[in-house]
Image (cartoon, rainbow, N blue to C red; front, side, top):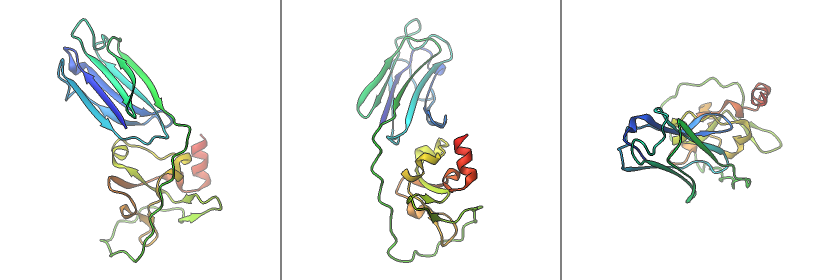
Length: 206
């Protein structure tokens, strides 16, 4: 869990911040200045996968940070309950990297269906080039994975080395990804890097 606290100076409209996945370069959390008030602390908490590497970046368009010529602002970044960065005086940008746990997370058990599901309204069939087959390693080759909604909203893309960390949500009955396999707060999205094709492998290597 990541918590970002910001107290703006007298020019809150100059301040923006974001958290990016350092492997993909995609922003996973973005903060704007709509909720910032001079001298009032604003906090935002986000749940992020613990095995990825992240970078917090705060920017000030005025180039004078949050302190001290135009007010006494500050910011603090906490990760898993520990403060990893406090700041106030900087120029136009300041950042800190965090995360990158070395221990791999315990895989979440895959759901098993006990009976046939109730028929759902017909969905538009997506373009599927690979069947939902498994190789001998046990990694599922299906271009669909369950991903937490905050990551989906931020445009997160599942990379090939993390394919087995997310639940496979391919439904062979309708030949497309299905949210039925996902937990509450997750969405089944296309994960092209997980289709097991040589093209996907080449793309990941590049």
